[in-house]
Amino acid sequence: MPIERIFASQKVDSLHGTKNKIVQVDSNAIPAQAFNVLIDNRIQSVPVYDLVANKYSGFLDIRDLVSFTVFINDNNVQAQTLLDIVNFGVKMFKHPTDVSITYLSRRNPFNSVTLGSPLLKVVEILSKGTHRVPIVDENNKLVDIISQSSIISFIEKNIGVDILPSLDKKISELKDLGVSPVTSVTTNVKAIDVFRLMDTHQRSGVAIVDENNKLVGTISSEDLKLFINNPSTDVLQLTIMKFLSCIRQLNNSESIHCATGHDTRQGYQYYRYS
Amino acid sequence: MTVIIITYRIVVDYFKSFIVDIKMSLNLDHCIEKLQKCEILSETTVKEITDRMKEILINEANVQSIRAPVTVVGDVHGQFYDVLEIFKIGGKCPDTNYLFLGDYVDRGYHSVETITLLSCLKLRYPSRVTLLRGNHESRQITQVYGFYGECMRKYGNANVWKYFTEMFDYLPVAAIIEDNIYCVHGGLSPSAPSIDQIRVLDRFQEVPHEGPLADLMWSDPDPDRDGFVESQRGAGYTFGQDTVAKFLQINKMHHILRAHQMCMDGYQVLFKRTLSTIWSAPNYSYRCGNMASILEINESSEHYFNTYSAAPESLHNKPQQDTTKELPDYFL
Image 1 (spheres, rainbow over the protein chains, first blue to last red):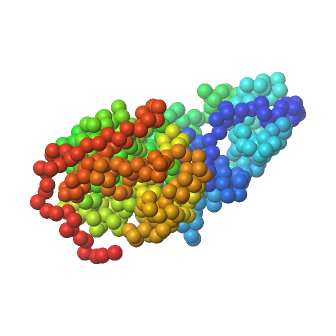
Image 2 (image 1 turned 135 degrees about the horizontal axis):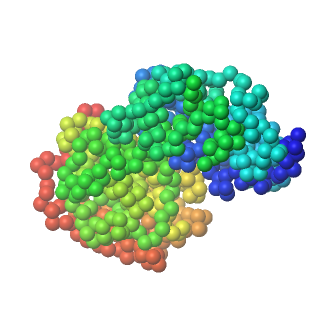
Image 3 (image 1 turned 60 degrees about the horizontal axis):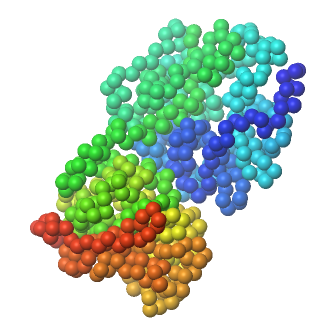
């Protein structure tokens, strides 16, 4: 397959997944500090450097914060700050005082690839479900992190329909894509239950399905004002569509991307990238 | 059929909403204006202030790096009008950068107004104000020396005291100005000869009775005795000129700046100008008759001790009750 040859000939060095700005935390940071770093930088996970062992212990992932939030909800505790979430959330563990970020990061191992390796090696790791691959130099210093997004960006820039004809096909025509079972819920489910699904099913995404093509999510200005002035875990009690609407307005974030069967894969990639 | 995929990007955005821009939910300028008239804020506002303070303090290191120019302030102990005097003499915030070395509460009559004002200034100008922890920023000490009693009187319950003492756990414990002046409330610790050891301590707890964290906030220099000797205060140590010289050498520093001890002249320089004590509460406890000072460090790292005496309002604004008489029901 020609695309495999391109990945094999391309070196990981050329990808610059993190655009020379690597965010990482040292093991002496407490969990709330480290989660703050994740949120401030709007990333899902961050490598943790173990100052004692002098190596990276793993990645601290926002999924742990999701577990904490679900745990807090199930224990009927209200949290109004990130600190509240972490301080209560660690009680999930047998020995809460031992829950350091090194401990949490070990759940997401640091399996690195060295500079000079072919991109194909990274693609193979990513295809097995890992979300990001750390790239290290000969001194084991972290120099880059390549995620699935970086690969998509690479494909978009460098690979045309001649190499990968399926880019031009409609998603519905691709027989090998989109056939694994999807974790899906209907629109009247609460946001906290979506969080719970993400937590228990270890999935990167949960699909919200509306049979009648009437996906609407509007939130009253009263609800929104309430949340701005008192951010809390209460907002997770809203239905998922209202929740999304609330978050979107608060963060002025990009509109949620939907793909329909009629979009081509290339079109979708471009859309996701803009 | 339409499908939307909820990904972790939404999750990150959700958590981001907890870190709300301060100006959106708290009108800090209004709070500061009110406090400057010596008016206390509502209990709910104090809770919000301390919640936001914890969020920003958590991102500060145990040892904060500061650039000159900066004005360093020693103990103020609830002497609110004298704190206002500091801003008159040293310059308004944020025009002047400030580093406070701790001991904001207890003994004075306005600990609540003092710590609330300093917290608001920190929230409003986070990069211009640095607040370190002193030995009085502690649950145990504040129950004996006045802050607890003052909160009970002014708010009718202990919630505000609880909010502030929780916030105190997050204050950094040391600072370094321009990579060569080491600043701490009390002094040195025999268990932490290297600043790197202080950097990795877990500071997010009540001030312990012993150990490096306690020593940083309780120790005193002793011009008459070398080495580390157990302190008569019951916590921390006294340390001599030899330990200071060794500390400066190991850590490549030129000077130690600290507070914690009253100086009649407002400041004291020891050990061949390698250690300075700075005291910013004039007429301490409204009876000692001492001067106070703030240390102004300019861009060229020159030191100037600006001394002052008690503000006129400080002499005339005594409340009816003596704060030091208030003791909680239980003793420690």
